[in-house]
Figure 1 (cartoon, chains in turn orange, brown):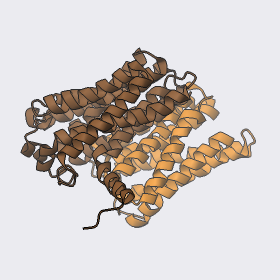
Figure 2: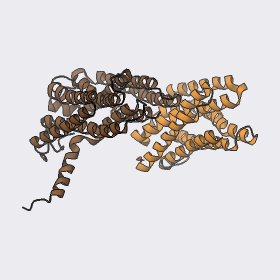
Figure 3: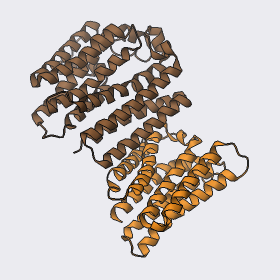
Figure 4: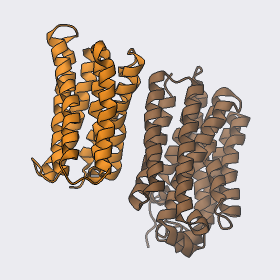
Length: 201
Length: 290
């Protein structure tokens, strides 16, 4: 499916929001969280620009699975580092191992289901962390209720990730055209929710 | 045949002349000049600022028109350029020369009246582009692009010079960033239109050193441009947040540069070319805010 001008505008706004978050939205955090969030929003920013240039065909590249793992991993690492001090080291270890495992299983030709299981576990844990942690913290009153927007954004990016992963494994839940049609909107909405959640939460 | 009314005649001439100034390229170079001026972060002299824009625009446009005049025979032989007004015969060669001289003289003259050093830098840009790059070296050596790059780096230096009153280290770094960014643009073009350049007899990196070396040169110059831009940004004193954005954008450029060397394809080349332009545009906006 060919990328439209509207898609490009939506992706550009997504990039601007991600750029804003990197430049201003994470200023008062500790350095590890800043690095983690910078990587997460940085991937969104650069990916948005590359999609504007190359169109949706860019998503056909095998490297997309590896790159798209970085977003949930680093975003969840930032959240854990900020709010769950006792889990910092184990989660950092999980982030590194998860990324390496996805990279390895995607780089070496493997016939069994190991690559899919690796992705499911890595995305599953990271995605649930992004979805649940902000919601739990909001319900517990430890953060502003609007911080739960980050969790909603996490749920959305999880849906996007699942749609793309199944598409890449050859068992699409929705048709490729439908996924591409909603992709820029979902990505923008997700980024906007993240930015709003961090700003007002 | 009935003569056109003066206004309609002028309008048709402007429409005809517009492609001669390569509006996208001229706008981007003008943007670098504005960024160079505002990067000084001093009290903005708005009188200087509002005179810099037209003077720099005219000087850049003038040199582009003079290039078109000089390269008419090359443009006629190349598929990419044979429809330009100069090569398709829509405007005469002498008309283009007159227009180029008038626009250049007004631009450089205005620049010199505004500030002599600024005017000298603006003139240097025009001289390197027209005399050194186009007239002297373009048909002789593929290394002519270095001089094309130096001339392209002059607007940002000129803007900086007008704001701070001297040629300083930051100005030179910013100029270097543009200088190393330009090969990404020109070398990608020389890869994409290699046959065109060959048929016109213009020596290029791909025809002299081969595609692999050219790709490596593109990657290397992109990386140097990103590093230089980052260095200049730190020196200018951008905030940590802005620096993070520049680092992220540079990482994207680095990723594409490495990909173009190890997994070369037209598609990757094209994306590096486009991304590098976006990179430079964003970088210019990022170094402006205080």
